[in-house]
Image (cartoon, rainbow, N blue to C red; front, side):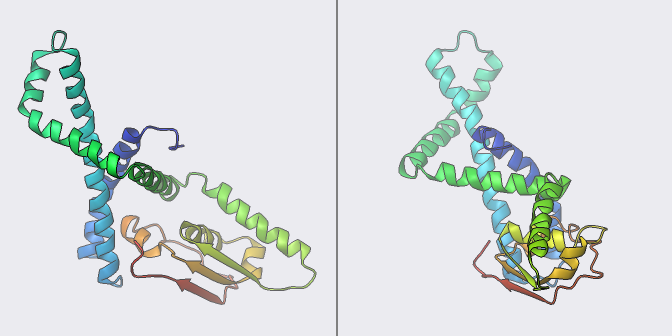
Length: 232
């Protein structure tokens, strides 16, 4: 959905979403989620500040580029009010354009890296906020469990190994919101292994996401989570 959008649209959307999450982060950092360690909270704040600064910086490029076009094309058909505003901030405008150009020259891949990260965050927000494609993705994992169960002649145990956001998909399958997991997911999945599960991150940014989960009748015996304190 976001891959074909230009970088300004991506970061404008990112900026709006991050602004809507500020209160959740502040409440988690100061008042709530005392079970979360200080490092996790600081990493979440670091992520928020980093992307907000980047989003604002790129948004400032829009009037900066407009000013550059005006200086090239001339001021004949431009409103005097717009010209006056641009004149007041001319030094800052040119500084932004020059610094951005230099940054892109010395680190050309940075734009792609931040663009990919923005797409991932925006997509995760759609999934966590409005459950976009949630049932479709969970359905695929459920059908895989069904497929393995039907082909297996013996009642062997099934393990699910999940990485990063895939861990959230696995948890949503095993512990659905206000409902029970499918029968074979309940009875056949005995072990869950997650690597880099962003559970704490989601607890901070979407603090009510894991509320009202059904845990009855699930046969899961073991959940192994592999994590690193340096992972944001």
